[in-house]
Length: 263
Image 1 (tube, rainbow, N blue to C red):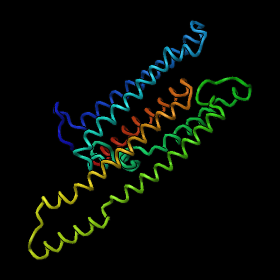
Image 2 (tube, rainbow, N blue to C red; image 1 turned 120 degrees about the vertical axis):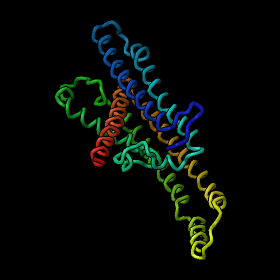
Image 3 (cartoon, one colour; image 1 turned 120 degrees about the horizontal axis):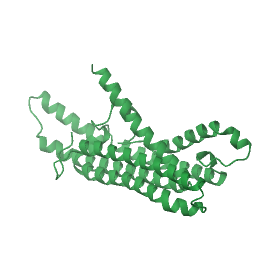
Image 4 (tube, rainbow, N blue to C red; image 1 turned 90 degrees about the vertical axis):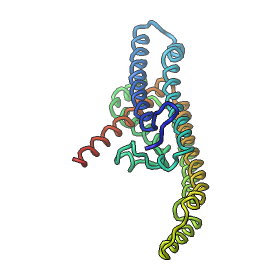
């Protein structure tokens, strides 16, 4: 577990509290959407842009700020405990199988959007055929889809660049291989290599790992911001709801599986 912060809080404890906050933001998004619909259909607001600016945009901003707060705190902890961020003990085994460089793979946000879009199109097909506006992600238009596709291409390209950088600091790089051979030879001869020497040799690797993590987290945050920016406020709320629901449920399912497997 990561060491404690100035308040005596571990990152694990911060993460659990952050999840509580994410659930609160999820419910706020759901409530904001319901309030918008109530006001719009009750004709208390006629101008949809005013309605979005008053209710949805501030709610979206708070949800995105919650993600930004997570990545800011994570980067501070990673400066001293970077290796724990790549295989966090506070996540479940299920989450570990889905993890990419210390978190979720950015391109999965696009996949989530397409999955949610397909589900909503299927459920509203009769309304679409009648030419009715359905108002959720099923209302996404071709210019938006083009923008999302361009975004996806850029995300996947940057993922590849980050992957390449990560491979360059992997455990099988030449310096690490040489160090492992030196230590092994010393052990065979009954000697040992001073721990300080090993730490000094690994420190540059940890610094590079922290930089890779910073890039990956930066891409994750930019993906959320740019994807929400490509959507209308209403569509953005639907997407953020889906993203939060998926994250929270996978975390719960994973903890349940781990608890079952340890019994």
